[in-house]
Length: 321
Image: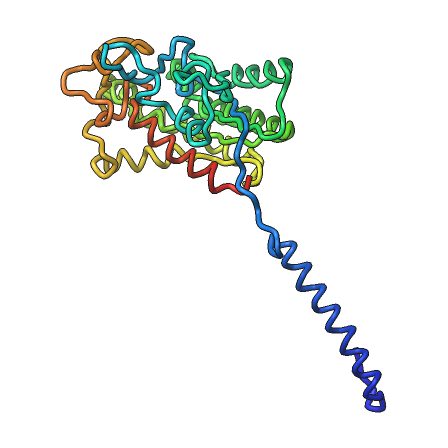
């Protein structure tokens, strides 16, 4: 804007006032765009949590878990001890599962995960919930699946090449991302975990020892990475809707420095009986729920579950849901 040297003081004051008003409006607009101003984002507190996934997230109707179950003073299973990651996340919000509800709270955490589930099964779990009544405002969903897919694909090696199997693992990771995006489109907030590295499991270590020519543990890691990469790049990349738990990076860090995370053994299964019947009374000699990372060949012990829980709680609390 050009001012005439002949402009009167009155006109100059008027123009200055207009410019000041425009400037104030721009500042307020910028503040609003950045989330500033007099209002603040409110912390999201779910009124209900829905758990989708596989063994890692399952609490059975009798309260057992695919980990190491705790016992009460009478030697009976106490489902509140040695919680799995979704239990810890639900408890953080004061939510309770019907499968583990000793205080008889109104069930506000819904167990839809199933043992043995693959990604296609998780997609079916979500659609079953849609058909059964769907979702509502205040819902938080959790998803963790893919380990059973990786093991199924690996069982086809070396009949299929690593490149071919990795491509399919990536396709399944993308499919899980589509399930996440489906939930977002239904108005649900989502905490989804990528896979802990299957190449670091006791199963992988045993497979590596069987084959002197090929590092089979590395094959399992490659399949895991392919799955996780496609999951990560295909989910809705918006923290208002999705929180991604990076479990693979966390457990790789544990593998590099177990003692720093409090682990005495990250390669030996702790359980002497099959899951979900393993308890603190049925462990191999020397094993503890806190010192061992793995309950069996592929399932996390309670301290491994606690690693997942810590990441999930931080993600749920810190995301701008």
